[in-house]
Image 1 (spheres, helix red, strand yellow):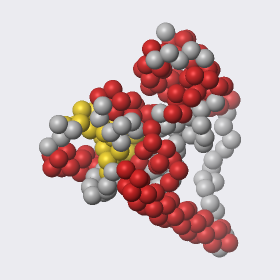
Image 2 (cartoon, one colour; image 1 turned 45 degrees about the vertical axis):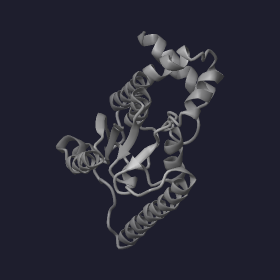
Image 3 (cartoon, one colour; image 1 turned 120 degrees about the vertical axis):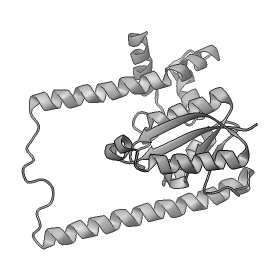
Image 4 (cartoon, helix red, strand yellow; image 1 turned 90 degrees about the vertical axis):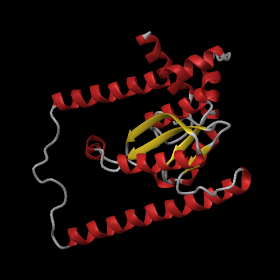
Length: 232
């Protein structure tokens, strides 16, 4: 019996708190799993914009796929990404069972399926770019009409707010390190010892780097290992 780990994503905290969108995605996943006579072994929910590549819950979902020897199951392609390069990086790092999209049930395996997925991701990326362009044009037109953009009451942050923001950033980094802890432990067991070893293993698995804008580097690996040592 085939096993799946589902990945559900919404873009805002409000949607995440209300469940708006998540229940619909969960229903799509449940229907697909039932039709396939498969088993859903885990579920990961991300509350993050589609442009962000540093996604802790996606990393956890991929790790769960490797632990359970399961396929990553996504309700729709755009719930995973609209960036063709990032999408294919996730597909490559998903392990031997790959990624399954409920809205693409007939996607063939192998290079043909990867080619078709690349074309679909390119279309989704184009759509996202056109939306951004239309938004910028609308804002520019509004500004030209004299409309005040943004919050006119917004003031520069106080030192206390800056410290709070820094603390929140550090907390997110620590949570990210905790999410990757089991993966790092597995890499140690497999023989990884140096920063280069861990860097290559993280990149080979397609796990997003802290910045989400490129591959892992030794410095990022060093910070990750230090955080894990500090909490050990």
